[in-house]
Length: 76
Ligand code: SF4
Image 1 (cartoon, protein in one colour):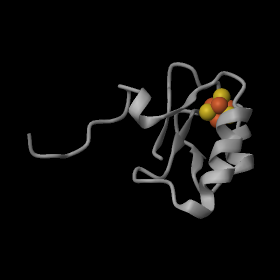
Image 2: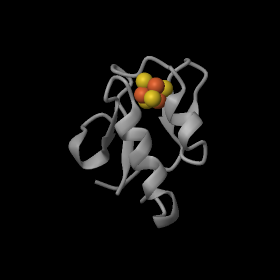
Image 3: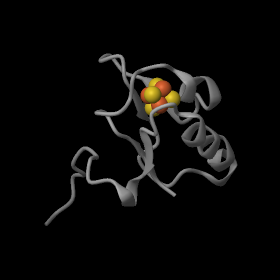
């Protein structure tokens, strides 16, 4: 799975970072972002799922459900 943090929903509480700092970080804007832009490695999936379920605003979503990620540099 791939996940993204909906920047409009994140309140920067830091819960996701506390649960899985390998996958999430608080960026300079005070909001969380997912550090892993590719598939979440199997060994982190449980922690990332915990973080998704623990996010108080539901800001962490599967990438395929979101239109909101930064553009990927891909040839059109
Ligand atoms: S748990 Fe949710 S609201 Fe809190 S920092 Fe992470 S993404 Fe943002």
